[in-house]
Length: 203
Image 1 (cartoon, helix red, strand yellow):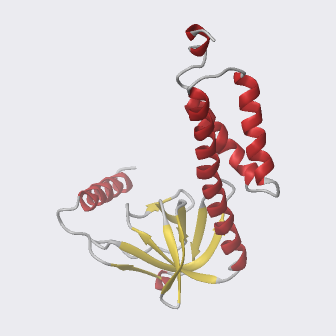
Image 2 (cartoon, rainbow, N blue to C red):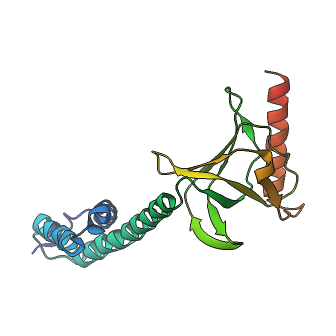
Image 3 (cartoon, helix red, strand yellow):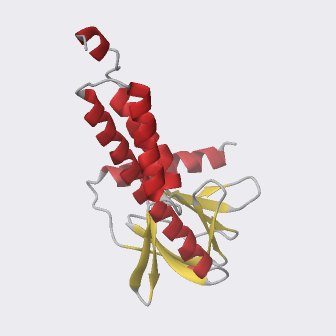
């Protein structure tokens, strides 16, 4: 085989096979994981139909995509199973404080965080690496230099792969820990709080 034909495989092909593995991971976590994996390899070989040093790289990239995507799919399935098991029950959530509270036009207070954990009997029950939006109808307690939010409420999943916590009363909300004064996260939070206060005072 000539060098020209070997160069027909784009250098970006391993990255494409990795993405293909990620997309196929949803199938691979189903009843026939092995079949999905071998089908991906068979299709890849049929498309290439040549000998090249990049073939094993492509296969490894596809396998890596299947693995990473499969782990993520298993995690999400576990999150959903946990939510179903705790449906209609109050849970205690601990989440890092990134920004302060915001108020929507309908009067509800909201806070968003990139991750959170659910605790039971003061022990971590499950960690979530998905976004959480916290809703409160009443005015929440003000935030100072605290590190984490502690809230008890109803935890639900949304249609976008994130989660929602509905807190019924400010008495079910609290804060814990302290962010060092030199931490940029505290500076950002203070600046954001100032901008929000200015926006409310000057609509």
